[in-house]
Length: 436
Image 1 (cartoon, rainbow, N blue to C red):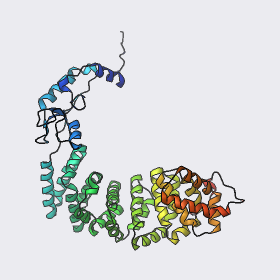
Image 2: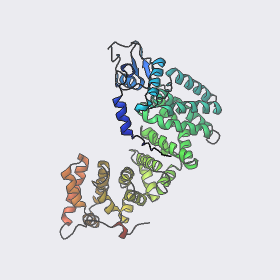
Image 3: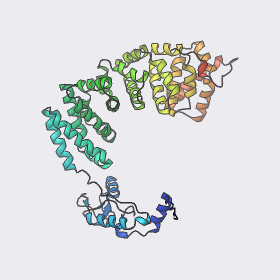
Image 4: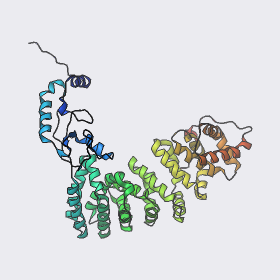
């Protein structure tokens, strides 16, 4: 018996076959000129692929691309007969490398979203947890289906409705309503990046209420990994909206202990990054609240922990840790802790021009705060680990105006101590005595 081995065609060969195949013009989208997978017809009577025409309309265009007529409506009617013809043509030409064209899901409509959100508001007023949970899961399902459905859900006011529901069930009871609160958080995680900056004041007030923030902190303490992650992401996005939210969170007990715990004992990179951002907002507040938090975080040993994070973490995490470290150097206790740690100067100098522009700004700023008291031993140590050369290079390459001013002042402070001192080109962190 003779066996004939048949070689499987590579993806490149399949693409060449598709390119050789002539696609009927009526199957091509007039915009992309590609084979349509989800043909829809506009009020002008012209059919397009849904993804292409939606991109056209979202770009602020009000006309039909082919006829240039002003559209009477933006309704997109699925062209089922043409779609079936395209699918049949695809099946008939499988040998030419045409992939199977699945039947597309019908996207959610504004009317459907509005109706479910209206029912969700009613369930929230009655504190109907079971009904609310079912409706939240329906909206979450739409959000998981496509980017287009996510935008439709958010554009119809879902964030405001969800914020009100979260506040109401949090005020009632964390423990009793944990399931519905977790589902709301899980959905809001993907809603925030789409319309965060257009979040109305009422929604901000609901999600930033004392009860809502207490619930978020409770989830950070007691929830499982996914709930902690969702809570931290929502908290980070909320605090980025303004000072009022920062002040409200500052009034919650144990928030500093919970946040520092995620830095000292990391369980997930996403949570660690978000925790650093939340801490940064707390210690950057222009009010007296930031002074209290700076002292508290220093007492918790965060200065030394941050130095370890800066050394061992990837760029994004290192950048955020440097930002927090710089803010902690604003207070005398933070500077004293930094002076006592043998890693401080070598690490800060090493990260200049090595991570990002923002990281360089934070490193220079922290060194400036530590050196401006004119203590000779501080300036000598900075010289020994190569700060002078790094700052000269930074000025040559260019930097922001504020960083430039601090760099120039640091160079002037160190200049009198340069004679007789040699720069250490590289620093072996293993031989440095750590503070913990």
